[in-house]
Amino acid sequence: MFISISNHRSIEILVNTNYLGGIHVKRMKKFAALGLSSMLALSLAACSGDNAEKSSSTKDDGGKKEQITLDFWTFGATGYEDLAKEYEKENPNIKIKVKASETADHHDALFTSLSAGSGAPDIAMLEIDQFDRFKVAQDRFANLYDYGANDVKDQYLDWKWEVGENADGDFLFGLPTDIGPKALYYRTDLFEQAGLPTGPDEVASLINSPKAFEEAGLKIKEKTGMPFVDSIEMAYRAYLDAAKTAYLTPDNELNLGADSEVKKAYDYAVHLNDIGIVGKYEMWSPEWANAVNKGEFAAELGAGWLKGWMEGNAPDAVGKWKVATLPTEFAANWGGSYIAVPKETKHAQEAYDFIEWLVSPDNQLKSFQSHGLFPSAHAVYDMEEFKSNQDEFFGGQASAPVFAEAAQDIAGIGFKGEKYFPVHNEILNALKNVQNEGADPEKEWEAAVKRAEDLMKR
Image 1 (cartoon, rainbow, N blue to C red):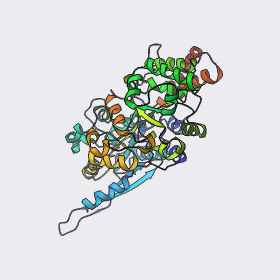
Image 2 (spheres, one colour):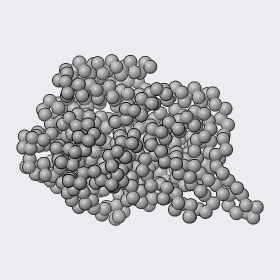
Image 3 (cartoon, rainbow, N blue to C red):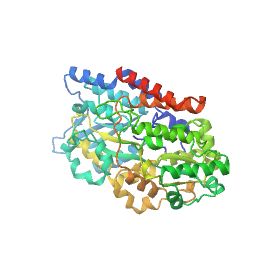
Image 4 (cartoon, helix red, strand yellow):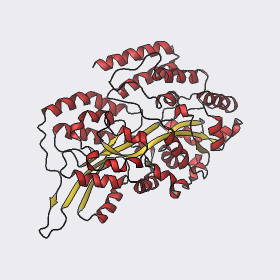
């Protein structure tokens, strides 16, 4: 899941990336309409597998290295163009042509080219929320274990690396890039008014369980009149994002039983709403942005990339927000990407060599410093430039170590699959009906499950 916003970018830019975790409605409609998995399966069977001419290359008769051009498709604001220029200086025979697109357009174009068997780039980014859909096209990607990836495996967080593999663990689709560890963003002024501690370590010690989270919210509501969390979706995602098995099993079977992790997350969100500590803001809306700026709710369960948006879009809130680790029950990832090599490339080794360099610990530090891409290479967490990176927005707090700790608390990422977001939207609609219309939670749950079952039949 790449999702990162560097400083001074507006909310418009963030929305245009179409990379908003659960807020993917337009993009998901595109993928649902395409029927990605089934179309890939059909198209792969029909394709001849002929490789198109992809990279320009010449070879000097005097024995000079072959001149190679690699097409690299990216999305969002990564800054990889600048790093590609560095690589070209170190490797004069390599030219990297970086094409950056919006997230939906990028994945649609990649899907089309893979289906056609021609036109794919030499190198492609894959968003973590899209990954499971592309894994059905394994024979359209190079196995990076064949080009040396096993030699760098130990440089990355285990859970991040494992998501890049197939189910058997013998095929690696992509090397890890950024991640989105979640933490507790909180307003120090509202915490102080409620008589709660404001130091990050003290807050983490106080709010160390789902029950303690609820109790802190009640104090905020009682003393300040403000909701604790901004929306019922974020209350729901507290447990959902940490679920080992969310809506679908790895066999693509619906997982919405009464004892499922999804139902647990649903019930928790309903409970927090019932006791009055959940706001009615919708993330990324103008109303939500104003509430972040003015302090109209006390806490957000956000990933590391959220601070970049805050720094550029909440000028009145400078020094009033800090971050602390979440209870381990809520430890989860929201965002990140991988970089893969489509099989039709004529220069797989050269493509691999570049991406290994691109996502090395040293270069992940550069990407973090320039564009806020949170590193998946754990060696970065011990680098002084990373640890001492104080944030003016957070009152001088060095927030990076908080997210590094959160990243290492994550046990893994659950399977998503093709129908993840359509099902998610059905459950979320049920929760909104409960909050906005006073609908019966159990009836709404049952109706959402029925709609999800219908979706799975399509």
